[in-house]
Length: 112
Image (cartoon, rainbow, N blue to C red; front, side, top):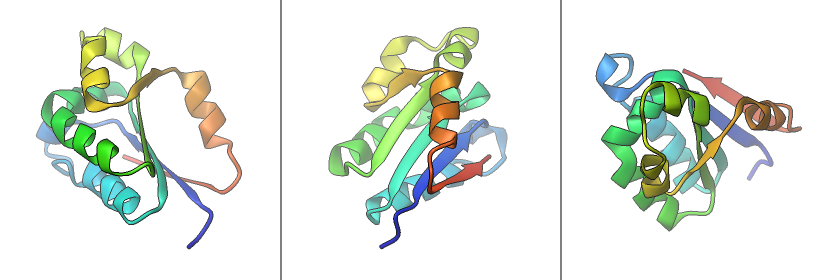
């Protein structure tokens, strides 16, 4: 197995017709296969919490290979309550944390 850390950044939500959740499913599938994956929800991606909160929580409960973050600013701008990210089993984060993760050696970034 490789030592890569996959950083998925979702900026769309499943209902906008730009992939309909396939991007997030790809991140989850990679984590379930044992790869280290961090999934960030930015901009309209935080709206995914309304659509996939239960599904994300279930996956996070079955693997320690997946970490979930939602941008606190994006959540506030879209009136997404903190309880949604907590219900999904994830955490709020800010751009400084995302940049730190982006700069991690062996990080492979996939942005949608």
